[in-house]
Length: 143
Image 1 (tube, rainbow, N blue to C red):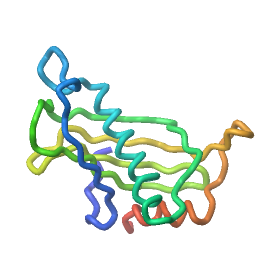
Image 2: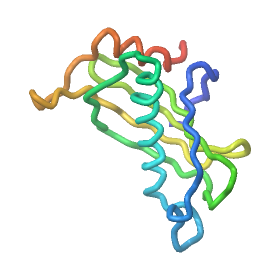
Image 3: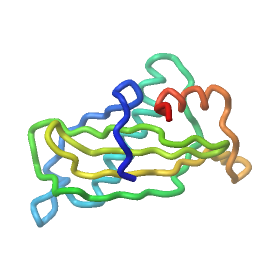
């Protein structure tokens, strides 16, 4: 899960600010909020940027797996924090994402997700369309 960070052109960057409500009684960001940050980053990556550009992105995805390693506590800060996301593997009906939640000085968490293309009408996994594969490959660094 601690993949080498690929060049910037293969990473999607989602910036956010930690909110007071994200902080728990221990004075740092609650562990569950990290998953919300990952979700927000994925939504912007898959649906935000491509839709604004008029391109087809991904549709009908479900999360099959999440892994997360908490590297250091994150507290309330007025500096932007970001989720850097990239694709590490593409299969016929699934792909794997890697993430770093970080600021300019430190990495707070590393994570990975397995996403599956899903057909809700048939209630099962489906293969990616050629345009979906093209979209994913722009975030997949060369090996």
